[in-house]
Image 1 (cartoon, rainbow, N blue to C red):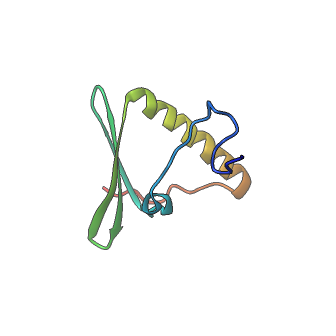
Image 2 (cartoon, rainbow, N blue to C red):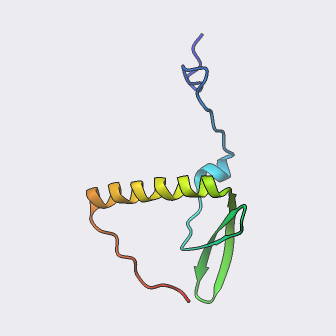
Length: 92
């Protein structure tokens, strides 16, 4: 019997998510910090002078580098399809 939720390749990675995580959250502020052995990505929502930390992601330097390359590639594809993304102002 075929299970439509399972990939046909038994070696395929299956990632599960709770409904709340799968819904996603909107972030309009990201901060990045690093130490010798990790990168910390903080995603927040800021409205006026108040902000809420939505998620803190910790990555190894290797995974942070891979993430950076994947993000750059995805942005390049997005801009090729939709036009240049302006950087906008930077919060100090």
